[in-house]
Length: 435
Ligand code: SDX
Image (cartoon, rainbow, N blue to C red; front, side, top):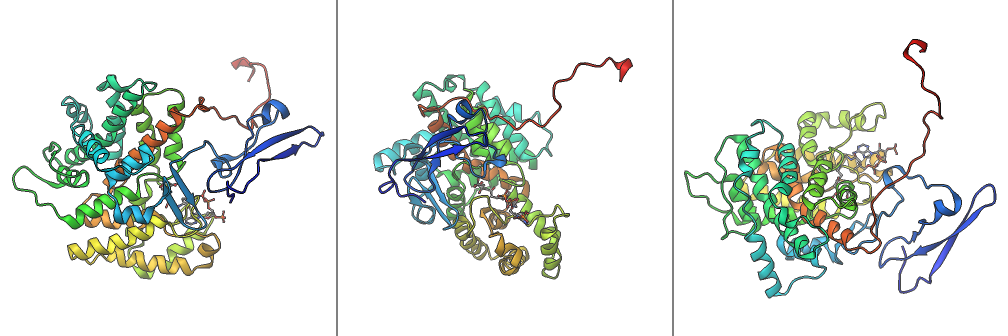
């Protein structure tokens, strides 16, 4: 880890077997590892670097989020996630991620007003929704609806106009909860509810999801606070798979709605945002504490595709700081609802056993943010298929902040990785009669 105040500018020299060499500058950030600037490597050595999965590659420079995987640290614009989860609100974290600073009262009031007055969606969108089968997975519905927004909001698709970038950003942050709730209501055959301007962001989402026109909806402050905190914990996370997808899509100049739809598609994968849904399925599959050891054994078996969902992380080689907050919130919500969830007991026992097991300890596989979120969301009444949808609602602000930073980066250019080609060398076409 470098300390920019101490690091003197330096470089590394790479020399190939045939004696060609290139000197590459090393750049230091505020925190975290230095980077070797390899941009001139191919021009000077006619060779590429090779890094499938980008385990050792910095794809960009960013000021938004910093993760120290060894220390279990997550900072948003320098503020630790546990402090934001305890003291801030999701909308204030949205402002922080987008702007870089915490808002003063006037700035927050204006931002909140803008988001509130963008929560409704175009009335025609409900007919787009009705094109889906009722049993469509809500992530498929959300991905389709968000991509379709560019067909409704043409006036905010010029990505080089900062005013349009801001309007598109606010529209996406404001409308994702509305569309997520629409997808849920459509799947359960209940009437869609319009957003209410008198409710907070998290409260409004719970209202649109769980209220019905036939009776008054009563807000539960503990659940509202838990929902808001869950949104905060999922807001942004550096250059994860879905954020990198959004950046790559945006690098071609695609409109923000299309880029966020691409991010939703990537997040859906069970190795990424789909893990919260997969954790519940896994706990259901394990069934009881008596079967834990059998599944731990399967998770270690290279010939078995079974993985302990909710465990491990590309960056965290310590406890995911979000998982710790999520764990506390889980107990709070179950206590408030008076729910004794056997799956939580099973999860706690699984965590205890896994954290003592040599295989997991050696590989530093700890519970991640997805391990507990599914249990809370189930307790709050969300169907399992909605879990990753909630992750997408929260992560939209992170995707947008990273997309905006990429567009405004003077070094930005279209992303176009190269490859190590191991296919057939040049050969001539063979007529079917000669094959
Ligand atoms: C998220 O990137 C982000 O920031 C993502 C995220 C965000 O906020 O955006 O934090 C959200 O995606 C959290 C992760 C949710 N996914 C899961 O919980 C799915 C289960 N986890 C694994 O699929 C895995 O841990 C990953 C995908 C999360 C990370 O994979 P890596 O970094 O590529 O690690 P790896 O596959 O190289 O694993 C290293 C070793 C391997 O064993 P060996 O080859 O060294 O013997 O650990 C093993 C793996 O087989 N391993 C696991 C395991 N995860 C890794 N073994 C059993 N169960 C697991 N869950």
